[in-house]
Image (cartoon, rainbow, N blue to C red; front, side):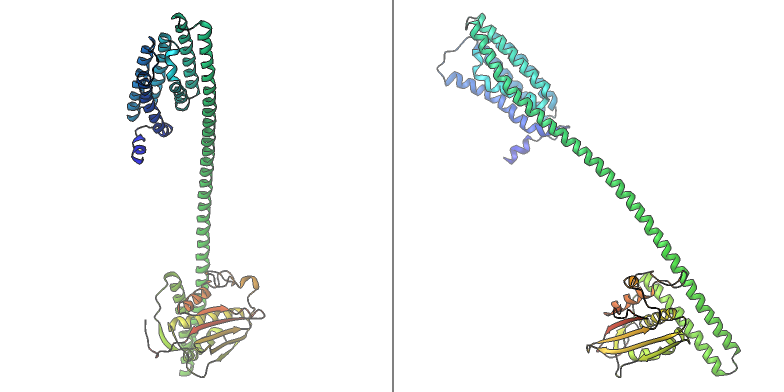
Length: 451
């Protein structure tokens, strides 16, 4: 069956509707090409009805129509769908009229089902005009047939034309049914095509709106990027300007120092400012390139003790610094420079939050046996409730324009999470100041560098 269905498809037909109608029309034409001869064979060999003179003409017309139907199948197979169906209808109409006029009504009694097919083919495959044109040809043929029967004295005029009228009414009912079906199908098709056109227009409008929205979004993202870059550049300029001021001040103190101790203290200030500048650069490079960390196992408590002077220098003299460390070593696996960067950034934020001075504390303790928690607290102005969910976003900052880059907390949390830990703002600290908690897993191995 699949082979038959595939054979009936005719890709050579250009019009998509005709291409869809081609399989069914070929089946109808094949039936028209074979059914009349089969009926006549049954008439000749399967019945005992005497042969009438007019039936020879009817037989000839029937065989001619069957031949034309088969020829139309050949034309359809070659892609000439409309030419095949229109020539078929014209020739069939002519042959019907001539055949009935020569042989009369009685000679065509076996062809009534076939004539219904002509109406169906004309209406469904061509249109309503072709349907009623074929119906007119059938009525004309019936009238000519009745006239032929009267002239040949086969029937009386009253019976002959009465029979023709009855058949005409029967064909009229069939034609009306086909006409309504064709009209309904075509209306449905037109509605579907109109709906499809509306959908296409709506889709085109939607695509236009989506394109405009995407362009607007791209422009907004570009504007946001430019704003973020400008804010970051202003913050870096401010931070580095401040650091250069510190370097220049400490360098001047070193040149003017009267004793080696004062010169050493000034140089230590230069080194501290340079360390902070280096931390800023590393923070920016990590955000831009996600540099590979050089992880090593080291004692976090010892490192915190080592960077205490650097933290004090970052906080300034007005801030009181408190450091509480565990009594035993707390080995963690982290990039040591990144660990220092996270603490320095938290200290710098606390210093900015306490311009008039205050208290800054770092408390490290072992929790849950296998984790180190470092609580970093200050007595600053705190973080307002609406901003607590935004502080870890890149480029978000509460500092004045040109002060800070908005990358410190975002990069710091990224670094800690990459090491398997967490950096959070303590939800309990909703009063004065802020408390950040860093939790890192303890490392059970020996302290040794690694990558």
